[in-house]
Image (tube, rainbow over all chains, first blue to last red):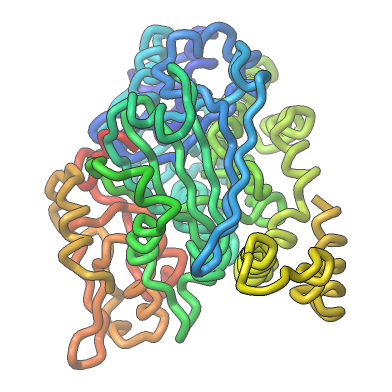
Length: 428
Length: 94
């Protein structure tokens, strides 16, 4: 075939979400993937929230290779020598349909790619896109493996760096400030042991986030997700902080320190690390987002900067799936109009704005600045830990009254700073 | 910069398919640029190091293709590309 309707760069969730939708409408869709198979280059923390995307892909996820449905949500404030841990669980999290699942991308994306092929989409792996073809101000295709491949529309779903979007002029390279590095180990562990250690029944799963000493007080945190027969354990750290000249952090060492913490070591004891991975995560929110469309091109998923960290939840994959779906709708729209210029394709942004995707980004647009506050990472975990330490302490002699115990840690300056920080948090 | 044995052992768990020419290069003449020092600590695979002449050297074997060095150091000092299709790291779990 000399020309496709749509060429999609990258078989991740955005690319496969778009391909599934377009192939379902009978379009000639080509997905190019540089890995050996779809998923081979893809990494998540990770957890996928299915609630927001079920309606966009009816019935699709019923047979998906999901790991565990998350029923236990944990947050830990890690101080140097102590920690404060909260675990939330509720019956609603055990009810169908489950709102979120732990997943492993090599398995999940490979499965989704099969579904795309069943719909008639074509996926070619082991193929890197080297350039875009630009003709009279419009993207008309890509160069891959020495071949020129043409299409009405190219959808850049090539991940957080999106070199394709750069080449097409949609964006410039991302700033360290707007991106974080995630590193992760998948640690194989018997499913019965996982259930016992995390208070789980059957296929229930646990998710935990850790903040504080895990990143030595810098922007970021640790995470843990239980899979069926493994645990995904990792760290996320802001690249600007981690790479600060003169104060750079030895990132791989952070993960080893984290694994050695008394809060973590017993949970993974006896487990064998089976994979070590790293991935960059967009953290800049709405303000860091590049152009989502141009003449003959759209960008979706991480390539469009669609990941959102609001402290309690860190999400990206459902935005990827949904933006892939809406990119597909924009293409269908443009086909009806018979033109694929930026103005026609701009309906993509409108669709995203009407959907949960850009509504979330708009509602949480102040979040990156608020949660970038260093005190959340270098002050409050220690402070909370110290208050708890003294509340629980019983020494030789009389115990101090509780109010005095707490107040001792909160001099006026501290209360004022806390008040100001809380005011900022109210923007979220 | 981590204990290289530990990190090497971790990378040894991953599946890598040989990459022909290095896909990331330090641009000629930039070896002593201070921006490159950032990669020495943040590269999750520990692929950057400083030699006795104060130059940063890069060995791309074991690259996890995350892109952190591209963001931290910038494209003025790094000629950065993904490896050829079907080469480099192939995650089995991800």
